[in-house]
Image (cartoon, rainbow, N blue to C red):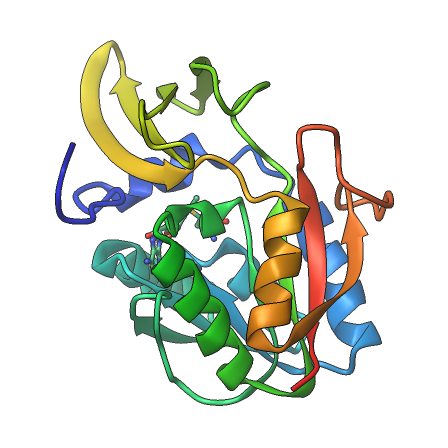
Length: 247
Ligand SMILES: C[S@@+](CC[C@H](N)C(=O)[O-])C[C@H]1O[C@@H](n2cnc3c(N)ncnc32)[C@H](O)[C@@H]1O
């Protein structure tokens, strides 16, 4: 497994093309409704990647700041924002610990929180988010797309998007109850064009979220199964949680 972090560092546009099946409009509509309800205008997009949500929300009038550890995804985000003539602020930073100002709200999409797989990193992430929010600020955490049926069993999937074929392999790491290895291989016109392997947290159950909220000054405000606002979490603990800063 690679030691350094490399999330499509060489080929950010492959990530953009390979994972573009998400219904961004439905997700952005969800975010817009929640942010509006909570009077949030200045919003932080954590692990923003190439900024699909950030750009769409900026077009709706929100002031969006994106943060991501990958310099090439940040560069691609800047390029796309320029092409679309949309203003967003972007920072290449680690979401484990950061301090880039105060916001009304923050969000993290596409189960990206699972990239934090060490207990101390998860805790310091929640502490940083708390410090970055104004009083009563909210944090929207999307864990509504888990790649397995059972987090303790291997899983794989294969998908075709545009000209890109993607194979994903999810393998729980033996003797490390909370971690899994995630391998992604991309092919274009039959040729292997990218291979990435990284460690992820296997899952993020609501009990862990509740524990972190209590420890870091949040309370759980609402939990939905999907972007259509269906209440609760799925049996395999997929959910979108809205947590609120209480101190
Ligand atoms: C699944 S992608 C999601 C990207 C984007 N939010 C989207 O929905 O398409 C996960 C993102 O997490 C970022 N990431 C992983 N670990 C990170 C860290 N420690 N700090 C900041 N970003 C991180 C990766 O660079 C990547 O852009």
